[in-house]
Image 1: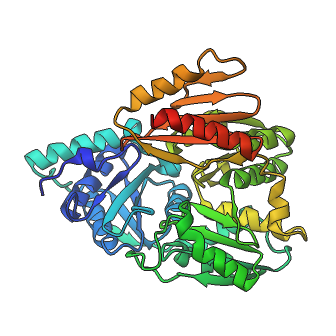
Image 2: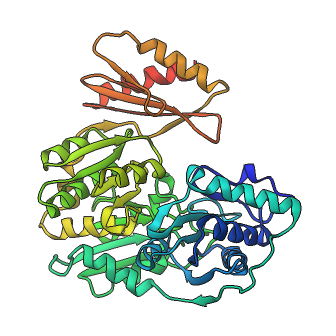
Length: 454
């Protein structure tokens, strides 16, 4: 096929519409290129429940094996289950998923051995160059001795490993509603939760890559309405929603109210620091709540602030030896999980904390949710640089404020902060604001939006 790789090779992964933008023939070339760039003798490959995933995954495996690489196919899995396999086996990995994107999309998340991410600066650009070269000149010559393709199953081992990291055996019995969104949480949750003191109420556990009930993106409030309703109906202790590839989790309390991912980050950070004797570095990106670095310091840890994006979090975790990292997008990263993100492990920490005391989740997380946030607000703008410059000009030199440009523009005062940063892929500016009270947050939010949209 005539493919424009600039449209599907993103900063951190491959993602596009199937078969319009890419297909199995292209997946085979990506497999060959991945084999060449990693130089690995063996790799592991998994896929989600999308209709196109098995064929794309098998084509990738064929491409890699033709270059002499032994491939272990672990079949249906969550993204963090693929990271587990990469870490446990010490092999590079490829996960076929488009996460929360609509059904017509698919993609590949790639990692080196030990779940080390592959992005534009760490191999993805070279993979793209090779695929483009082969599209022009024809497929590469196969190796004299092709690799093998064998099947493996890691679900039980993945579940056992997660349970070894968080002890839930002595918690009180919890009634837990889980909305898998017809994604891979429906595959992993029953095995991970098996034998635990959990009364599980499953929602949309049927694997269906057409997402018949709602998009598998729990950060959109519209997609957790069913979960909120069911939690209240069941009088459950907690509700948990996973995205399509189940690497992110979102939490609602017993009243069905959403719990901020920043509060979850702070709660898990406190638990991880407790496990490490009150010592350790915790990574957070610059749009997480002020609560996160405060809680980290209160529990003896060292907070480190990064840009938004998993490649920056993972790189900083590796550089600092951090024990944990969290993003406001509900990605949670653990040193004990090869610095990779796993929503399931974060969920187990929340369940352990909730079940280890008698109060409701709302009371438990109140200690970690101290400020009022706007959530992320997107504005379509023609001139991203010009609008960003206008925001900077409005606050530069103002008394009592500090500006930094680590990622877009962050402006902070004693009572509030906001960050404005451009989208890498769309003509958008993204605003996040937080303040000590609702009135101050509303004021600064509206003030900045007026400049952005002016």
